[in-house]
Amino acid sequence: MPRHPKSPNSQKPINPKKRPVQTPRKRESRGRIYLAIVVIIIVAIGVGWYVYSSAQGPPDFAIAAPTGVTIHAGNPVTSRVNVTAVNNFGGTVQLSVTPSTGLTASISPVNVTGSGTATLTMSATANGTYTVTVTGISGSLKHSLTPVVDTPVYATLNTTNGTVVVELYRAQTPQTVNNFVNLANQHFYDNLVWHRLSQNPPVIQTGDPNTRYGNTSRSTWGSGGSPQTIPLELDKSLHNSLGYLGMARGQSLDSGSSQFYINMANNNDLDYANGGYTVFGRVLTGMSAANAIWNTPTDAPAYPEQPLNPVYLISVTISPS
Image 1 (cartoon, rainbow, N blue to C red):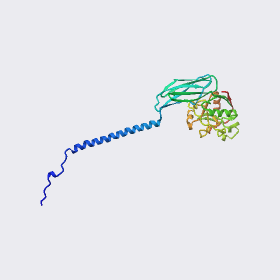
Image 2: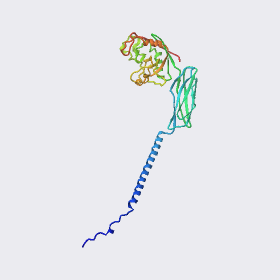
Image 3: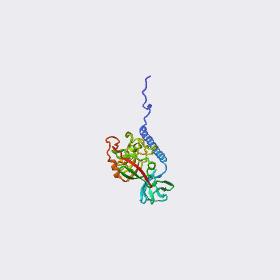
Image 4: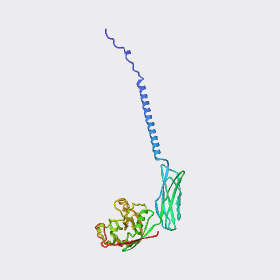
């Protein structure tokens, strides 16, 4: 039987509206996806910010000031107090001061908003050791600190070439000054050689018991010290400038003991070299004697530039502060 051709009507008719209907649906689907992504990103940012804010803690403030301040009786001294905002703190901090007996203190301004600085002014009529408590209050927040305010200790260095009078800053470097005073009172420094007369850096150095009377082996000069060691005490207000005293030490930062030096020029690089050196005093009178010691002929260029003929630190006398 002959095959009949398929009727045109037997084929599935093409819906002329199919393509126009599918395109808007696809666009709508993609739009929903994009919207969901945006929502997810916004939620993620919100959660992240919440976690970050929670981790940072509530708004607060901090106050900072030097831990020690040197004061001379009868002469006012000022020090800076820093207020720092923490975690977007924007409140006003009310500052007040409470000095110990014998010390007069004031602070200005008394109100600091957010971050800022205030000036602490102090004076005393008599030598001594004082404290001043600085308090900051903002609402329920309260912080305070108590710097030590101290008059210097005075020492007279009797040398072969004359007398050198120095003031020692026990407020900023209490352990160093206490150690120096104790050694001096024990006559530890009597008849020691200024064993290092250096041109680079320009310093004169003494305090090694191996040099006593100058009749010991020069190979040992510079290697000795007192039995106890003291920690490094750095203070931003003290620098290795001309006439200032510093503690010598070994490789360890906390290996200072008895050896000390006088800066014969501005050696401010020593503030940072090898971790820095404790600066604990300043020459008041007698730099001419120190210069005479420094200009003594040495065995340079040998290190550590020892004097050809010994020059001595005869004694150290501590005066009442």
